[in-house]
Length: 169
Ligand SMILES: CC(C)(COP(=O)(O)OP(=O)(O)OC[C@H]1O[C@@H](n2cnc3c(N)ncnc32)[C@H](O)[C@@H]1OP(=O)(O)O)[C@@H](O)C(=O)NCCC(=O)NCCS
Image 1 (cartoon, rainbow, N blue to C red):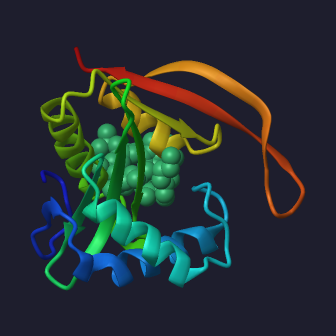
Image 2 (image 1 turned 45 degrees about the vertical axis):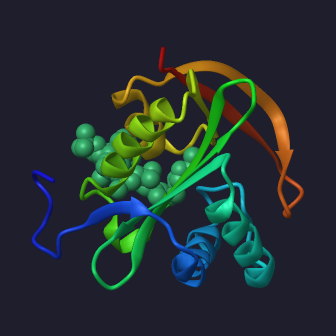
């Protein structure tokens, strides 16, 4: 990863059940930031852990982690719909952002989605999430739609979302 600050090398690999607790802890920390992901604090770690283990074990999902040697510092999940679209969600731990980890996860996810036979990757992102939108656009994702006042947050606010897609065929 060019331009990354010095630090341990980061490996992108498929998640295993042994990663589940650490990934959920990371997800809970990102949810605590309150601005970036759909999952809201407080995260039910038991329930999220069960869901993640199911995803790791099922055929129609791909879960990748970025492993810095001491455990996962980033995670990316793809859910493969029968009609050929892979829905993507991802997080990088706050202290590890801006070092190319999101890019490395996304590059591997695109390869794996294509290998799995998907013709497209789709995702939704909050309009204020400039870093995520810039990352997705750099990989060729295009804005395909805009959902207005769509998601009710625990605060009662209604948030918009940008719909983005990357054709793979
Ligand atoms: C979005 C996210 C996954 C990116 O991961 P990352 O490891 O920081 O990604 P990278 O280091 O590979 O690249 C980040 C890019 O965003 C750019 N960036 C960072 N902040 C930015 C901003 N405010 N506006 C525009 N671009 C920004 C960086 O410059 C970098 O691009 P570059 O390589 O061309 O310089 C990470 O920020 C994250 O996990 N955020 C919280 C959770 C989240 O938003 N998930 C996505 C939900 S849809």
